[in-house]
Length: 160
Image (cartoon, rainbow, N blue to C red; front, side, top):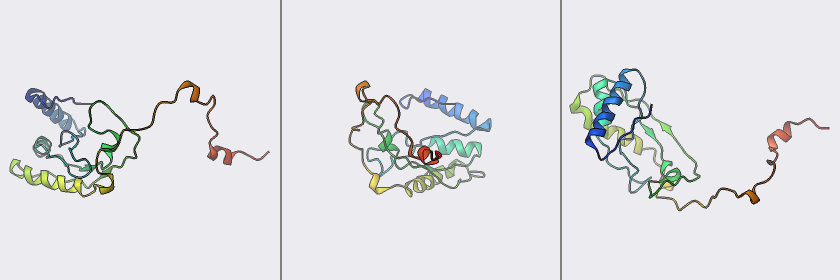
């Protein structure tokens, strides 16, 4: 399930939270990006986390699994227009943080702990918005008529 949300609409945000809660109560996972968007200084500093994900986890008693994607902004930077670039990706799944027994008063500490865990796996060398990609779709005249042989397949072929 994909839950859409208009970050500028309180009604849309409320509906998204209700839908997320129902999804969790049905035993399914929900992925939430608590920043809401890519930071103005990607790979260096995260934006401030919103409270909703942490309040939701506490209310439903589900653990939070922090996920660090330190190269995501290089693959799909938050710039004008949709611009996907070739880039290596990395995903770090951290240990779950239990929320059982926590109350709404614990949400700020939970939010800070999650923030610190995610930030701990940043890669300083990947900071900043990358330059526009130079990759372009091949034209018909530059596309080979048959694919190049795979060296691994050639190595498996019996000698004749």
